[in-house]
Every structure is written in C-alpha cells, then in structure tokens.
Amino acid sequence: MEEALSILAIAIKNEEMGKDFYSKASSRSLDERGRNTFAYLARMEEEHLRILLAEYEAIRQGKPWLTREEALEEGRKLDISHLPEPGEIPEGLFLPPFIFPPPEEAPGIKGDIAALEYALKMEERSYNLYREARDRTSAPLGQEVYGLLMEEENKHYKVLREALEYLTANQTWWDDWEKPFFEG
Image 1 (cartoon, one colour):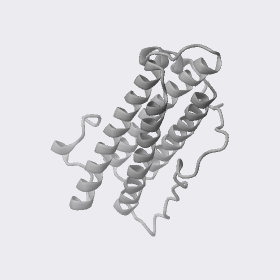
Image 2 (cartoon, rainbow, N blue to C red; image 1 turned 120 degrees about the vertical axis):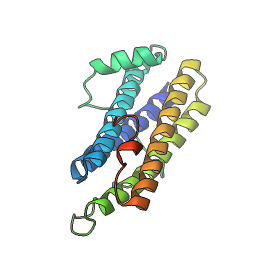
Image 3 (cartoon, one colour; image 1 turned 45 degrees about the vertical axis):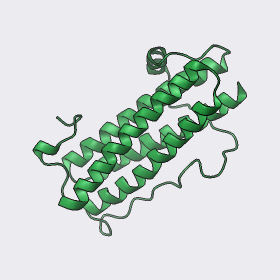
Image 4 (tube, rainbow, N blue to C red; image 1 turned 180 degrees about the vertical axis):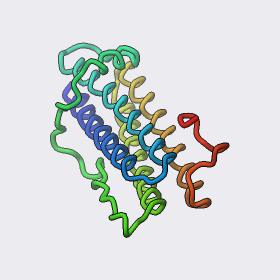
C-alpha cells in the first residue's frame, strides 16, 4: 500500500507539473493553433491528475483500485488545489522545470519549438514511470490504470513529435488540412 501511494504521489506531481507547463506554454504561444495544442494537452494532464488523485484517495482509505470510469467520476469531484506531496523522490523521475526563454531570445515559433522539445522529454518520463509502476503492481486494476496512462502519454508524445516536425519544417503550426483531431 505504501509503495502504491508513493508511486501515485510522484505520478500526481508529474501530471501537475505537466498541466502547469502546458498552460504556461499555451499562454506564451503567439499562434492560435499553438495555443490550442498546448491548452488541449493541459486539459488532458488535468484529467490524468484527477484519475491518479482518485486512485490515491481510494488506496489511502484502504479501498481497492478504481476502474478508469470510477476514477474519472471520483476525480472530477476532488479539489486539485491540495495535492499529496511525494516523499523522497528517486533521482531522474522529474525533469528540471522548464525555463521559458524571454520572447526576445526565442520569439514566436522558436519558443514553441523549445517548449515542444521539453514536452517530449516530459511525456517520455511519465510513460516510463507508468510502465515501471505497472510492472511493479500486482493488482489487475492498478495495472490497467497505469496501462491506460501509458497509452495516453504515448498519444501525447505522438502529437508533440508530429507538431515539432511540422513546425520545424514549415515554420508554422498546422495548416488547415493538417490540424490534429482536437483542433478540428
């Protein structure tokens, strides 16, 4: 139980950092499509945070793991302004915070490219954390939750990689026919 709570607290912190990072990246992007992409990712990180927090609360109260649907439902009711703080964190689980370059040093697209490069590393770290947690968890529902989060992080990684490749090659966010599914 203690190990599960520790892993969940670390995962919650990762998702909180991701949500904050994407929110800030969204507010700094000069392109509407960039803002929309980062805002979408911030919303997804918050959803993951809520799932993890619901699981954390269930385990903390001695209850079994929740299904994805139960965790989503319970997570939407929880206050995410007061999150559990992880104890001692093994080195390498968190990336150092991203320092957004001043606009004059990385105007527009350069700032977005730097944010995308950092985001790829962040998503990869989260994926690896969930994979390790899934492999260490004996509870089938716990394995399912971590597996779901791995799939989600993999989707984020793909969106980010495609955005970075397109932005780097074309010096613009997606053209109308290239927009990802969440932008329409």
